[in-house]
Image (cartoon, rainbow, N blue to C red; front, side, top):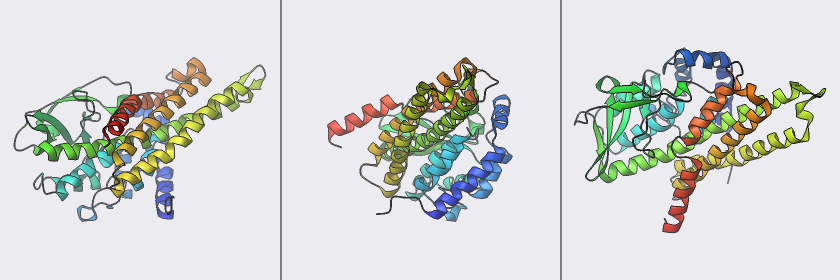
Length: 349
């Protein structure tokens, strides 16, 4: 069995890395703090590359690929703290809409939505069903909202056009995530699925969300460790770079070890979900737990090595810290997923 990415997958990742290195510098991320927007010239560039429509079927204008292909690209998005909602739109919403299309629910609406994602003209915000009532990331400015109501027979999934909902902005540690609380009137026009069908769709969507969020956390952790290592080589104390002190080396090495353990777990979970493994849901929980802990530790170490300057506006590190702290809780924290995994094992499921 071949446990490695293909040359084509790695070449695609490298191409996206080169584009983002030019199009998403820390200056661009800072600008997004002042004027966040879900669709930008950068988003259009990603759409032209096929990134936004990676999970969209070829018949709808996409590439028809899976999570294994996407996690590498979302990791690159995390590496630069990409302000646009790539993980939510392409990693969570698009596969959910594909599932709806495949089972013939959602009517004629899912096709145009998928085509809009592939072309870069539609961004989607998806309610985090693991945190009922919590604000929805990306809701402010999104073109489409995938929201959940609760009926007598379980969850009810709705697809709500942004013009049909009232979205109230919610303050966020990371302003580029554009949190919002959506109010809308559920109707037959917005209805997509309910009962066991909706429950199954949302469970699968939540697992995918955990994995793609984990992939973004990998990129954030890598970026923080890299930046902090570079800082430790330049920062002088007692006439020597602080990176030459054993205590600093141990801090950075420990964070790097956690990252290297988390990375294959996230990749493996993407493969498990793509292949329909019966352990896919458990793998997703393990991946999110590992990635959250790796990113939180990378953030802790990076801030400790930088000192108080690391959280100042002038220092770029805070852009990555805030995103890592926010995403470590999104779609279930490490503790949430460990509890979920334990419950699954005890139940023999």
